[in-house]
Image (cartoon, rainbow, N blue to C red; front, top):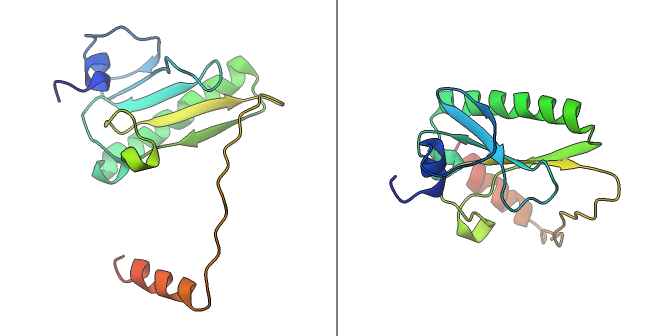
Length: 136
């Protein structure tokens, strides 16, 4: 995709701080990190969201993400990390190219991932279970 900023980064049209690269994947520092060392891991091939990723690409992307997490933990001595992917604008995706965020976490770093917990009314969980499970 020619106007995708992550495709341009993968094609070296835009500079980035690359921490890992192979022929199919790239991991680089986020330019607006939640914490210093925040890395984005992308397939070089353009896919917009998680469910668009071919299974083999998803498997390899997961392994690259793990490799970066290990390197991050060894080098930064972080206390933990968050791994996540936003899918579609409603879910917070800014760049429409599938990518995992890896955020190193430190005690008292001030980052809060929180949401308002909801509840199901009587019988509603069963309805959601049926809707989802019948499509699997």
